[in-house]
Length: 113
Length: 133
Image 1 (cartoon, chains in turn yellow, blue):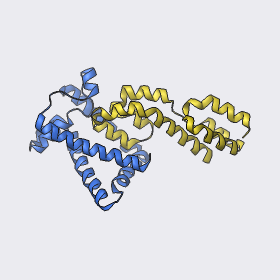
Image 2 (cartoon, chains in turn blue, brown; image 1 turned 90 degrees about the horizontal axis):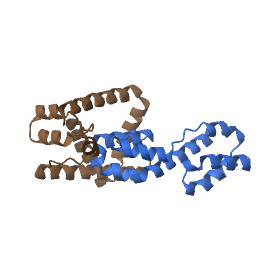
Image 3 (tube, rainbow over the protein chains, first blue to last red; image 1 turned 180 degrees about the horizontal axis):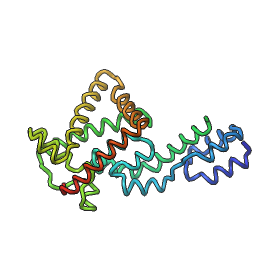
Image 4 (tube, one colour; image 1 turned 60 degrees about the horizontal axis):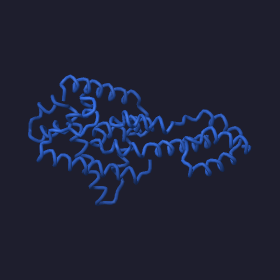
């Protein structure tokens, strides 16, 4: 892909990724061809800030984990009352990073398609 | 999710649950740790599970089912996962994670099963709110 397109894409979507992953993503985007553009545009990224709000409001019943596709852990969180409230609070601090990891996985999947 | 972090979460959950049960058995806490219950005053879907398990362990099976049927599920899951985790720990296997990921995959690929579970959980939650657990 052309450098301009890659930079534009990263500028528009940088909030979805960890800063440590951005360089790697940039390299893989540069190496990819233009046919990957459609899967990349249609990739379903989750907004870390929205996930944090969801985690604070409904993390106790595991909604944040369900949304990240970790259904098993979501069910466990639901059944244990958010790990007696402790796991729910720990997740307030971890969920943004986890969401960015999830988005990174999504972009890798889109590039593999 | 990395397998090693999943293993640690499962271990911590099982150990925490046993400590909580032991603590509940001796101290009979009257104050709930549940955030939802403490903030809104209404029980969360899992409220009453500890009390239900305590009743099962005391031999009051019917009362436990009436209080919160999820106690049965919680106790079975706790005992089952603890046995599997112990076997994993002693024999250096990965059975708990494999079993966990298998169930997760089953839930992901069978939406009808997930819908039935969600429906049952919501009915149970409404019942809990009605009972004011």
